[in-house]
Image (tube, rainbow, N blue to C red; front, side, top):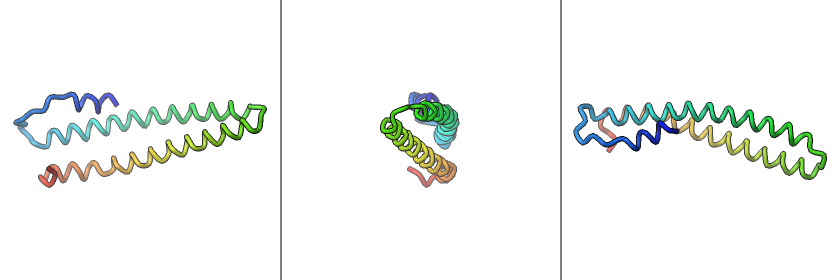
Length: 105
């Protein structure tokens, strides 16, 4: 995510030699951030697996079921967010092409 923050902290060049440079940098930073996020999601998923093993060892069935349901909802939320992000990222090349052709303001 630090790449995205770096993008927004950069000073705008009022007379860029290539008007598409900003878009190219933005797309590259977003893709780099997405790759980093993907690795972080993988780590989070492994942590979810560890939590599931701990929940399975709980003696109280009511508490175990409540925590299992909560973990299920957390995994579904993570899966849905990851899917939505991948859908949006897949649109970036088209956005970059439209920007290069001057069709984006």
